[in-house]
Amino acid sequence: MENAFDAFAKELNADYPGTAVFFGEPMRKHTTFRVGGTVSLFAEPKSIEAFVWAARELKRRQLPCLIMGNGSNLLFSDGPHTLAVLSTARLDTLRLSGDSIISGAGVLLSRLASAALEACLTGLEFAHGIPGSLGGGIYMNAGAYGGELRDVVEAVTYLDSGGALRTVPCDECGFGYRHSRFEDTGEAILSAAIRLRPGDPREIKEKMDDLSRRRREKQPLNYPSAGSTFKRPQGDFAARLIEEAGLKGLTVGGAQVSEKHAGFIINTGNATSADILSLMDKVKEKVYLHSGVVLEPEVRVIP
Ligand SMILES: Cc1cc2nc3c(=O)[nH]c(=O)nc-3n(C[C@H](O)[C@H](O)[C@H](O)COP(=O)(O)OP(=O)(O)OC[C@H]3O[C@@H](n4cnc5c(N)ncnc54)[C@H](O)[C@@H]3O)c2cc1C
Image (cartoon, rainbow, N blue to C red; front, side):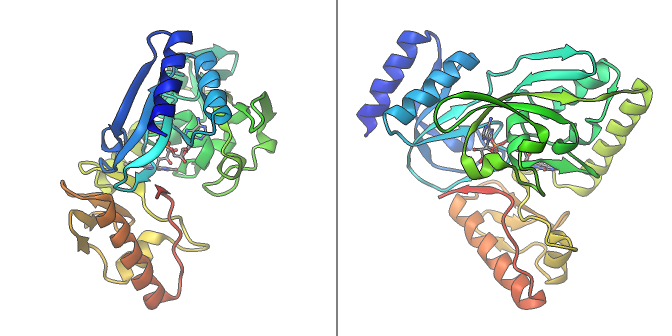
């Protein structure tokens, strides 16, 4: 199959010269956990046209493909993975239109929130400290401090499973807690319109600074991680249950339940994916035995 990836890459570069393509690329270089084995091919198409061509062509050739944003919610196993990864990093155009921002899927949420501040628009302050892309954020309905992307998404343009470009309004995105329809369908999010409201730039900045300070105080930001490892169970908090089960500091190899925030599993330096996955299993089992609650991973595992 490796030859098939090679042939695909040659055609991609013939049609879209200068596309960054890497073979046998280690995913630790592209994920905030800093772990993960190699993938057969990693490509960063430079435009929506190139991206759409690549996604359609991989499907036509029946080559397995994963769309990725900033890799801040992904845990690749130690691999190797027979897989093409299409990164949205270069789908990074951003344009203001009245009270809306039209943004490529690869734009980082921090940049989007800063652009909103610059345009005196409020509504995205909650997203400033989430280290993901807009596409990855929509996929997960990312949220923090009482805000979620579904509160601000006006419409999403995506590539459907039949290879057609479609735009749907927010209420057709199937948003739920850390969930959207895109998680079920695997369709590639290409861009979105974000609807905000006029606001006072001083207040917007103050709110963003306050949330950043709260993150720095509570979260182990100096270690690689994927943020909260588990989803919030109904009516409770994963971190509270993990702490109550006495699991802060629990370690497998280089993976550790953070002492600072029990909801985070961190890579203390030399963790493997196997260490992290094994620690996740232990935490799940011990929390279940202690409180009867079944924790569900928030981080997306690529086996
Ligand atoms: C320190 C830290 C703090 C965090 N804090 C928060 C927080 O407060 N709130 C929160 O919700 N999350 C948080 N996260 C998790 C993460 O940042 C979010 O889930 C973010 O939305 C993931 O975006 P991404 O671009 O990195 O997605 P990736 O990790 O690249 O991908 C995640 C999933 O989305 C899919 N995907 C990505 N882009 C697209 C696309 N364009 N089309 C279709 N599918 C796509 C991928 O296939 C994958 O399944 C945190 C992570 C870290 C490391």
